[in-house]
Length: 623
Image 1: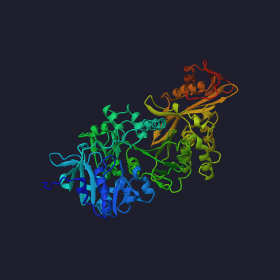
Image 2: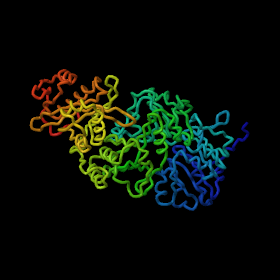
Image 3: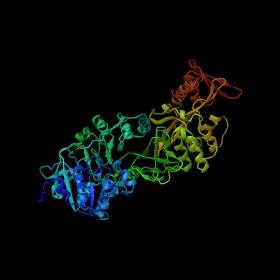
Image 4: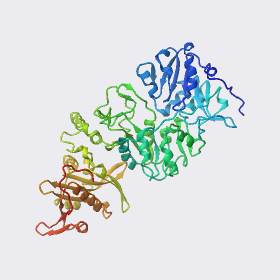
């Protein structure tokens, strides 16, 4: 069937196929064919205007040196460290494009290829080589380039899926025996782990993951070892998945598409990873136009995509490819996966970033993007933005709601400046004030609980919850409102809701129970205290939505509220209970409070004294 057998030649002989004016596709990432590039640069004196196109590559890129400007011109689909200066100095070009659409440039003839320089595994007995750890846009290059030069390396893993190239599709073989470049993981830092702790609860059992490279994805993976039946559908992955596969956490059993298979386009990591994927049918490598197609991504159940950003402005616009006007990376697959994830049943698209840059000197949450910065992901596409200070859910939210949520997850040193900028632009109301101890938000009190079959997220209120608190108020029956306020309160104005959600987390504290609906959080219960500094007593109140009663929500919230109060030096809780609130009376009595009926006011009053309350501390750390 296949009769062509390509000659095995030296790198120099193979590179003779490149002529002036050619466009050359170069292999990607850790599989860049370095000996072929060295041979190409050695011919610089006899070549003119050769265009080299590729994704991110590691290793040397001598063709972008100024001395070779007449011979070579690089056109980057993704700007890596080795070509960044050349792009920004004007010695190389940058083509911003979705990763899912690059191959179409080759197939359509918009960007015809003369030569493809790739690295492959040795051919099997049927003549099939594997593109190994990098299929991405290279398979399209092999199928469309006039001449294909393949560096045959026995160290290249043989990967399964749509990764094979028959020797009949290759014009020249060049033998090479050297270990692949490795991408080493860095030690997990505190900031990455803090971000990961906010992301991990967003990953549910049976979710399908898209992960990039770097400390944040690795930190997230390190926190998922108690999950069940996770899947992988991603443009790339690194070593972090290996541990979860060996622990039986990643099974790919419930993805809905390619069940039982981890689907990717390329992989970059250490030799451990390369050995693990070699001839391993658990993995399928496919071209980027398939793995990154939003319509394909959307067929996976519970997709969770985690992508990075350089800046996010207060409206939710994401810059991920430049620092101001200076190009830093590229669009890559971020938009592909954000949009595909949004269409996935139960999908969650996450933008994760540290709150600051340059050693804490600048905020990554900004009033407006820097001049010249590119918008990679639009404000209409963004769902979750996560920093080490929390989660801001933006999808379907107004500009006001977005701004308050993003300011709350910004670094405390920059929140007031962000608030002032937002007020000046009339994005948030002038009466909105940040908590006096904004940097003391007790995230240690956040938890995920199952209370008699009701899955709730427990966390302190933040000022961005004002609209949620209003919705909670208006969802109650009149008798619930009366029982809480002791009069028929008709409304909860936004300004009052904002005041009730703007806490100092010590004297004024509120803990809420949330359920998820449509990706957002909805309040189903609130426990609050307000302390008198003089008496060290606090007035306490609890309200649980009618639909969630008899689930233990009130008891759980009260016990956690009491722990917090004792930590902050409060000696006792006091409060009122309606005469018809039998369940509340029973709860307080069961918890050791004194409950007495006030005949004149026709209410029950309770006092809960904390026998072991400490002295009033100067600060109130999380319990």
